[in-house]
Length: 292
Image (cartoon, rainbow, N blue to C red; front, side, top):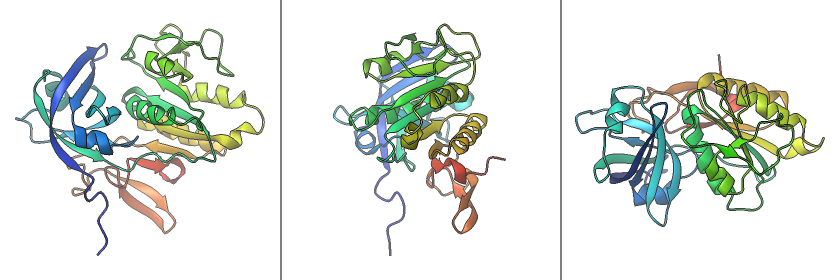
């Protein structure tokens, strides 16, 4: 008998809250001590957290950063319901029960070192995690673009890195990415200073059009965000004949493949199939997803 997917890779930990900071737009960054999850997590992984002992249903949160040596895992989330509002009330020193890491991660192709990372809203965390991993290998040339219609959960600053195709005045970036030496830009329809006044797919198109003629052969796309954004990214990737991996966001109950409540329709070599976002994903080939 072959091993089942994810056997011996999921850990249940009582994770101590190390930091829990609030940001405008009902957003929070939560850092917990969870050494087994931190050691095994990959970009695209998520964890299933018990928001409060009184709430039996856990909530899936994408992992934004990990430090395997220090043993911590960090999440960015937005309060949208009873569970996340209860989680937002948890204090440093308390413990939360956590299952993770869960899911199929991103898999960059080394033949395409120009990696364009697109994160929208609460889809930003997997892009930060992927950027952190890519920056550790000089082979990769990552560029990050983030969009949000609520204030970004950081104080944007001007970037010192020049990106081809950027409109005049589009200079805002995430300080963490700037510290990592990574070119990045922000987009929003809310008129935030230094941000592109449009969608990140528009910004991505400007960057792609400004590349040298043969450079697109080295480009691959990675994205996470709301469904309409990911559908637009898939269309963009098809237009430029670029490989694209997307991390899907779906409501989940068990998050370990048992309930099949998070299925999506995926085109496979054997025909259309219903795949579970939690364990068959959350990362899928964008062209395989049925977006309708």
